[in-house]
Length: 140
Image 1 (spheres, rainbow, N blue to C red):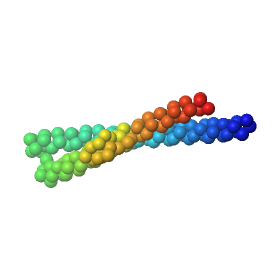
Image 2 (image 1 turned 90 degrees about the vertical axis):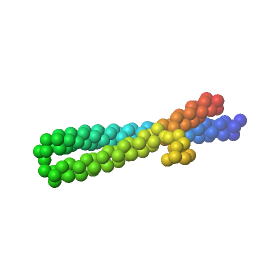
Image 3 (image 1 turned 135 degrees about the vertical axis):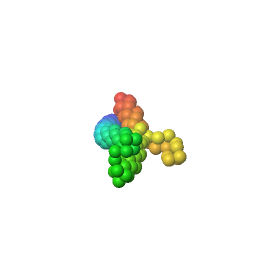
Image 4 (image 1 turned 90 degrees about the horizontal axis):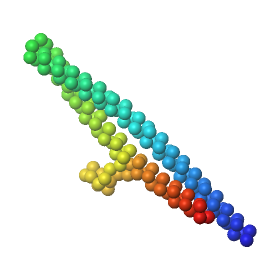
């Protein structure tokens, strides 16, 4: 009887440690998700700023062209700024899409032929595993 009780306690201890490890993994992923969302928000703000700046430069350029108030060199400089801002905007969009995939995952697409499991899917899986371990511990 003592041996059976000893094994039973060892098994229960093992699964309690396992449960704690799963909980730690959940907390780690929640932190990772928080930081990724924070980074995405910073990029979104930079994206919005770039879009607003682009809009302002385009308005300035069109009004200057209509009124013919700026020299050609200044118009060329505005064109260069427009090109640079459009490139920055595309880069921000790409980075935000990448972070979204990292957080929420992706189904099968051309870019991700096998799909991509994001932080949210990993969290769901760990929470499901935690529930299974809890259920098993109740039965021990």
